[in-house]
Amino acid sequence: MALSSTFCPRIPNKFRYTPISSFPSKPLLSLSFRTFASLASDASSQADKFSGRVGFLGLGIMGAPMAQNLMKAGCDVTVWNRTKSKCDPLINLGAKYQSSPEEVAANCDVTFAMLADPESAIDVACGKNGAASGMGPGKGYVDVSTVDVSTSKLINEHIKATGALFLEAPVSGSKKPAEDGQLIFLTAGDKSLYDSVAALLDIMGKSRFYLGEVGNGAAMKLVVNMIMGSMMASFSEGILLSKKVGLDPNVLVEVVSQGAISAPMYSLKGPSMVKSLYPTAFPLKHQQKDLRLALGLAESVSQSTPIAAAANELYKVAKSYGLSDEDFSAVIEALKAKSQD
Image (cartoon, rainbow, N blue to C red):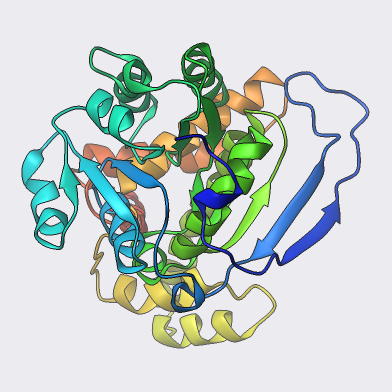
């Protein structure tokens, strides 16, 4: 089935058009593009049914709720995960199942992939029985994983070689936004595929940006997560310092949350951090991976990032303490250990 405007339910177009200025040099990415953003409508306002079949590869902390939201909106969803048991809750809700990424892609019009790291993303897309083997003209592959620019371009090449379309669409947001359909999609690649899957993105997210050529979406996501990881490390320092000088860290969280530097992350995670609790929304190992990839991106264009580099080392220490699967806010434990040395 060819991807076309009939693939998605009819919803109002709500594009917020924002020009992005050109930069004088383009060592890696062409940034002289125009950015499109649109506010998503609620899933309840979408049409009840899709004419296309949707595949979803990877049902972890992010993928499972994203796929479930597609199902709630009436999409015909086929799922796959390396650990088959993670598919069972969605199968019980009516999802179809295929035993390999290749079979999912072969049976679906568009296939989404949410994998943990570049190696997994490449293997699922391009490896043995990978999605590329089931792709062809009229199909689309949307990779919503957080990967580096070179990985995204490699996957794009394999998908495009089959005659299919490719869109990178990493997301800004963690577990709760994924559950609530409040993710932000940072897309790049085939514009026609972006237009075709826009309604699907609107079900899973609150906004979407089209950033031009493949690689720009991956780069934007790495920059965003680089900033976030550095912010959390600094916030952790502040919590510990406030307590050390006799202040109530809970009051610090309130003060920060009401001031110019307020960010939802602080008010959401601060109270738990004060109690040394780190319920996982975004695993610490993934934050460190993203910092590593962001530092590689910066090095490739000779951009100095000393703050991010220092934060990366702190997350590496936290991983060495066995905190990889805790929320990334557990990086505060690495600082506690340093203060006790």
